[in-house]
Length: 286
Image (cartoon, rainbow, N blue to C red; front, side):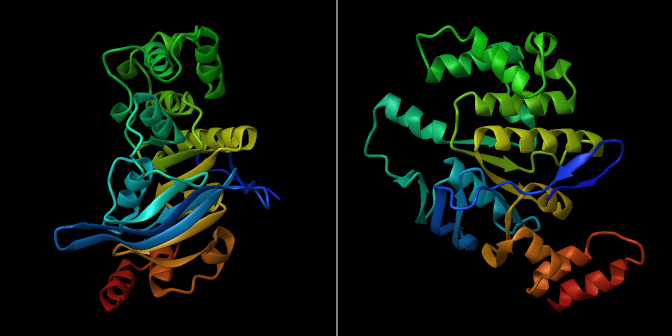
């Protein structure tokens, strides 16, 4: 059953839509990554099924973004495996260009700042055309570009615009279109709505929910916002100092957190009667 909340002037739809018994798209086992003396990721394992959405939450330095970058192929792990449809993404024995492109298509990433994935010197339409030409050469991509823009709620005006000529929400829509262009099995969203106004956040989150329902794509959602986690994920992992301290169905974890750190995260959200001094004392004790 869906329930509706209304942040600012936008209606944000909340609910889950992961089909039961669906195939595993993303499987991560025993992931570890060390930077000098800092264990950034320590024995992290999880799965995301087709059409599923998994949230990873934690404070800055918890290891959630490093985990996301390893899954997306932007960082290498010291140990562990990342499998997409059962294929290990770390297996680089196949060095042909088409094999590398196929591996890149499997997992795409949407960043907090869309300028990281959009070339500021060329229009949105050309960004999409160049992406499609790289991965699917020898095809007229005009109709596919129009389809992608429509899928994310953009039109011909945005197609001919430079990224700097668009609003933050429009740029993020364009970044999502670019990620979807290669038809990935999984989409990693790293604080993808954190820099947006609350009403624009609702629009982007609703857009992502619609895309997941229509395509069956799997989401890995990295965020510090428990409100976002509650509305857009089926399952959640709570990370602290590189390790998973709690995991489970999102509704269950947020309704009845078992680990003191999870309870601290939830208590840290401002609300009537919120006492920051008590939160600071609890953090020091933990």
